[in-house]
Every structure is written in structure tokens, then in C-alpha cells.
Length: 344
Image (cartoon, rainbow, N blue to C red; front, side, top):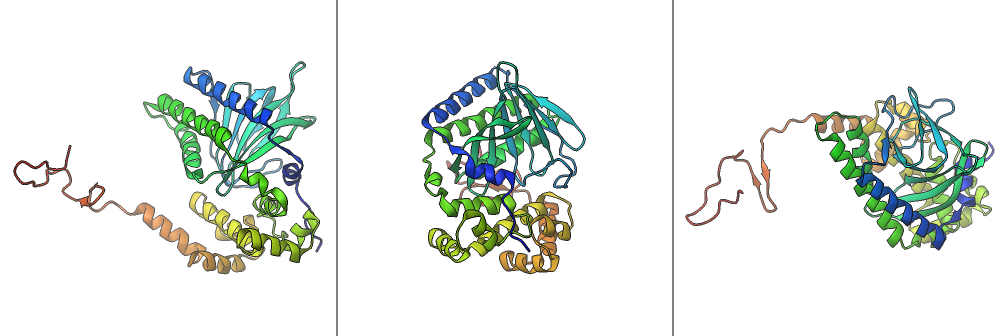
């Protein structure tokens, strides 16, 4: 079987220029302006409905983590399974994880299409400017990858924005505004303080990581195929990858695929076989064996335990203190004379 070739997104990642000092300054200014617009309620938020996540639809794609689009110039026509809308300048779109979508972009007579896109990986986030590389098709103009040890904070905020947008709580507008400003501020800070260490690791190791993250659903992806794409031998790439990361490339590929499968088990109703195929495993039985090696249990048991934990009632209401649990359920704790009870 011939080795798989790099997909268009992967080629764009490799060909795109890294952010220059001027690009960084522009990005900081964009986030500063977006924060001010959000504070004045002038930054419109668009979020599609979450329906049938992680389904493959013609002309659409999805990611296991959310994406954020900030429109700068022109417009983006988004298509989703049961809706569509156009994103205009000074509007931001949050596409929840697993939601299939397609994009058609349009420039203006005097201003070309341009937007700023945020993506999330494992302990890494990316920010890139997109332009209209081909008629109505966006592509990466310049990109930066940032090491994000606090990636869970970015993801929690982004997911909470999507969830709150779909709710009807009495303080919905205020909550959305606060979370959006906080998220924009985090992006602004990482552009300011990001060290660019990942760019020093671009080389073949970083490109291999990008290919695995971008193509982990491709069952034909292999060490030999990745080496062919990067123009080196499989032995050289394997040695280089293990030297730089202290992990075998084959193990890394399995780990990324299993991480994607775990997310699908936690957030979708897809069957184990469907998740296996979507995670790059041609054989569901082999997927089950690999999953058990990584997680210590089969996918079915993992999902069953997860559901049992979610459905477990709180048998004893409690108050959690830094040094103890209090099960008195609101009753004052006994304290010696003159000593505070510990409750406020």
C-alpha cells in the first residue's frame, strides 16, 4: 500500500511562515481591540448548535477540540449540519469540539479576507492569520505554536462559552461577556509572553508531531509514511524522535489516537467500533487491546465507569475545607467557648 501523503492542512502548517515581530505586535493590538469591543458589548459572539457531533459529512470536517475564529476583514460563510451563518468583522465564532463545519471565505473590493484562528492540541495552542489563498478557500498565512501548560484553562473557558451560549440562564449575557473577555485576555497574554520554544523544535520532530495530530484518524499513517513526507529514513526519524522526546514515535502515535478515542468516549454516543475507525484503527479488536494497554481497561468498561460516576448521587452532603470534610450538612460545628466554629 502506498504511503499516505500529507493533507492540505498539514502542508499548510509546514509551508506557513512563523510570526514575525510585526505579526506579534499586530496580534496583540487585535486582541486589545477585541477586549475593548467585548467590554462595550460590541463584539458579537456566534456559536453553532451542537448536533450529531463527530459525524463525517461531505464537504465538512471536525476537530476533537474547539476552534475560535475572529473575523478581521471580509466574511466567512460557515456551514453546519443544520444551520449556517456568515461571520463579519468584529464578530467571533466558537465552533465546539466535534461539530462538523465547512468554510467559504469572501474578500471585499478594497479589503482582502483575513481572520485570526485559534486551535488547540495536546499542551499546545496555535494562533494563525488566515488569508484567501485560492478563490473562496482560506489558508494559513503565518502561524505560531505556543506551549500552554494551562491549556485546560483555555479549553474550560471555551467550552463554557459554547455551553452558556446555548443556555437560557438569567445572567447568561453577563456570564458570556465575562468569560469571553477572560479568554481574549489569556490569548493576549500568551502572545505577549510566549517564548517561541516550540519554533526551535520545528525540525522533523515537530513536523512529525503535527502530522500525527492532524492525521491520527488516517489508518494508513505509519512511521515510514511520515518519514517519506519529511524526506528522511524511518530509522533516522525514529531515532531523532526518541532522542528529543524520550518516547518512541510508534508509542506517540498510539497515545494521540487513544487520547482522541478517550475524548470521543466521554463526549459522544458513537459506538466503540465507530470510535476505533475515527481514531485511525482499522481493526476494532486491535483498538480494544491497545486501549487496554494504555488505560488498563477496555473502552466499554471505561465508558461504563464514566457513566456510573456521572450518575452517582451525592449520598452525604458535605462542606469541603482545606484540611477536612464536614458532613454536618449546615449544622453548626461544636466549638469550645471563645473559639470560632469554622463557619462564616
